[in-house]
Image 1 (cartoon, helix red, strand yellow):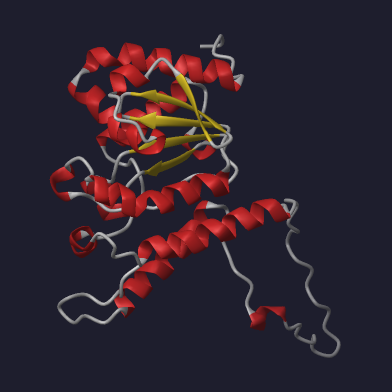
Image 2: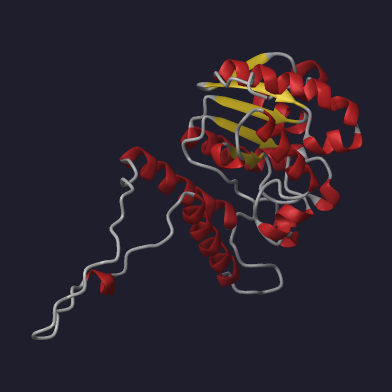
Length: 259
């Protein structure tokens, strides 16, 4: 990674602040709502003759397993690296936020997209625009919710005018999305669109030839389908996407007979 200072002389602390915000967001996405404070750990002695009030309730949720904690910590560290990255200098200068990913660190299914758009760049979250709303409906059609899957993109910064990622940009981000997948270890990866499929599988084949087939990436089974933004422009492609989702659900053991 290059130095986080901007070309116009702005101090690097802006990137540090942004990285801290995104690390805290990663903890919140993983269900960690508070952090221990040293002051809170010290017990106060009750006043003489006064009984200490009992807590209104006691937490009943079990603590996360060591493996889950390790994944959260690993993703948090990686999120910070992404937030401070300036390898693609033009993208780093133009971005509002890096878009790391969202979902449980133990997700069975990951959806891999191409790159953030304007809405994602503004919010720092993946797939929140019109294409993201359609992706949510696609996920729900196979009896899942967004909270049950992990969503990420190949690129962590928005390309100008949402253009297709350049080969060197994919190369610069490869280590990030590959490490995300290594940490999460999903059983299934669904590539959304040509760019995501070609980047993950390192192939030049178009999406039309890649869909309808199964591939492997590490220990994950991979299926490819059209990107939701393509469906917004070509509604007729919704049928083959539904066929791909049915294939994914079948192999993942999801029963769709109920609706």
